[in-house]
Figure 1: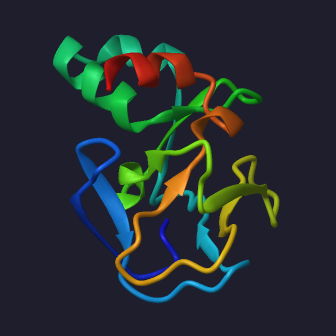
Figure 2 (figure 1 turned 120 degrees about the vertical axis):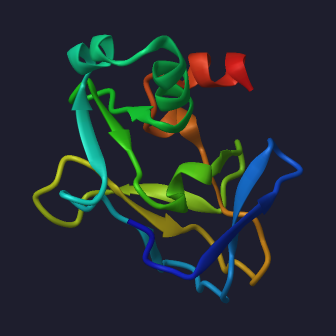
Length: 132
């Protein structure tokens, strides 16, 4: 669940991106997993999806390397694009959830695209990069 004001729009990185709709100071929590809002899905459940639905799901979900479960953000957080020099970092969980929070790695200006480094939290990183 996003914790800051954002909007989506055309990205210079890839297709659609997520953009700050407010100034976000360094250290601000930007996203956290919210049970009942965001989805946590077992790999075996993917077999129940049609091939087109599975392709879309895999494009927008990430695979937690520790739990081997897929996480699909319900809101526009699914439009975070990858960057090796991301302005948001996976910080680890601040509560009992298995999913880490994302925080602003530096001050982020209104209108700036929000990015994260998929390598840090997505076991499907190589697959994601091959479909983009």
